[in-house]
Length: 350
Image 1: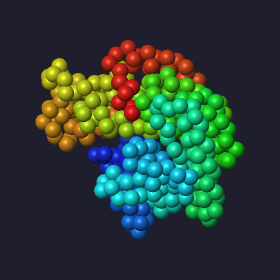
Image 2: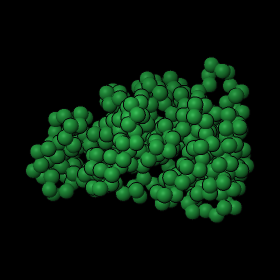
Image 3: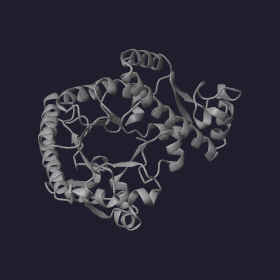
Image 4: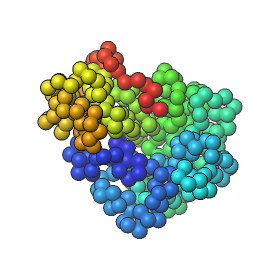
């Protein structure tokens, strides 16, 4: 899912996203609550009409933003009190508040409210956080269940438990008992080593039903996506395609390419030969480097379109490989080829 934090995927129009093949995007409950406010969006026809996007929208619960505002927050059983990051206004989000905001936004898929513990944290801290998250997710489910059936979006629960295998198993089993339309793995890509990230997924996926979507939140680099699919994950969101494009960096099957680098000044080739994105279809690396170095907006837009195409196409290739029984070979070839070259640093996922 391309990330449209503030009801826009940065520098890309809805029509361009459709042309790339995007079928669902993610928007941010906390940021839209703070600005312009869910009341404004509801009055203007809800999020689809507000942003001109007539395909699916998933909104997060606000839990991760509460995690990132740790210095400004106070957690109680009811929810989280904090100062918003714009002007310090006292703000509260709890399970019912989060669900109401997402309902007002008109999302197609909403996330239960959770607490994302930091990495590292002690077992005791992780266990207390998980207990509270499970209670919050149960309350989210109850709020959802009490809405008119015609107004209910799909509701996903979020597995937590930090880096502790037994807590991840407990969280997954508890969520399945509560019952959700889909299940997300949260609390990953928060500063932990990549092997810990993989272990967190491996600890809980076997306990999640195969008939429901399984979603790894906030991930990841291209080889991480491939490895997560190999472990049973179906859905992802990630800011990397747009974030690193704004720094002049593009994804290719052989790793990342920093188009600011001098060797590209006279390079007549596209970012990646054979790529069918709008940038590669028309423009050379030399031209894109010129745009980036000149701080022309077109440069970051074209690299963003390329990176989004790369991610969406990677998912298409994995779906096709699964359908024709060649995923194992695809996985081995892609990961080896990507990591053998200038692969993207895992730290930029955080």
